[in-house]
Length: 324
Ligand code: CP
Image 1 (cartoon, protein in one colour):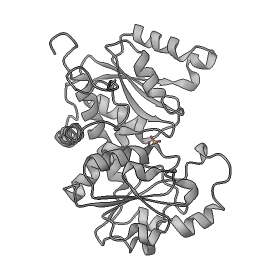
Image 2: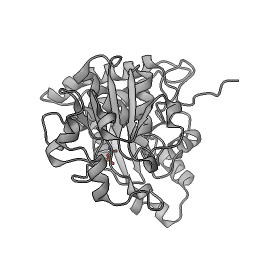
Image 3: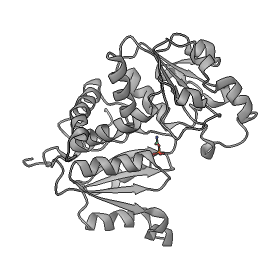
Image 4: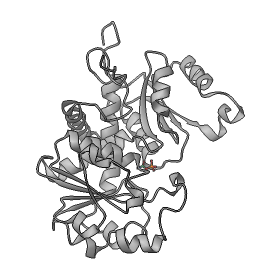
């Protein structure tokens, strides 16, 4: 028997967004197209549409965030939702209240959506499995597992610059082992039909059997970046590393830091991406991060439209067993 994807309702519409793994190409394209329609809202004098008026969204962040937390809040406000932020370090969970009891209390306040970031892989899935049926959960990054909205905003940025996904060569460089972003990007890129997805990094930072996800592995930057259309840099996620996986940051930068010299192996019109936060002089040279090829800040801007799309699709579904 096929395992039920709890992200989808009986009609195959998005109820939660926990991972991109297993989602169909058509659904990913629908999210990107919906995001495209929201980009005009940002240019309006009144940057608001009433799509989620009356809905209450809760940002439940158990781990630090700048970009994701802020753009989810901005996206919710642009959709006219009420949005709350629970500061977990000062909430009652720090006084021993269990996560489930905290959820029950938020449910009692008639919230409609939880946007969850957590250090443990599987946390968003756990919460989605335990909330009341009318509540939707969006994963804003869980451990090293998944960061679906980041990957979607990355796909949106790639599509805006490159048009079709099919003919592209995309290189993801750095700490693939500990990266939830890389995992979600790989699922998105392969589902959207990208011709060649490469992962580039030292052996200690590439997961075993990663090729089974449909990627090619490179340990040499020059070969890994050769003729790439898109270069995605990742930071070293030291907070998730156990033991010494690298000789030194200096040596890492020498071999895997993206400099203008190394970027010359990619196509001349290649774009450089990074989910942030960037570490200048560790995985990326300042000159590259600030160059005309860098679309790093554009990724952040696109995050608002993509998160508006996901939230409106999830909460815009007709109520189960009833009208919209
Ligand atoms: N890309 C990303 O997840 O950044 P934040 O940790 O600042 O949210």
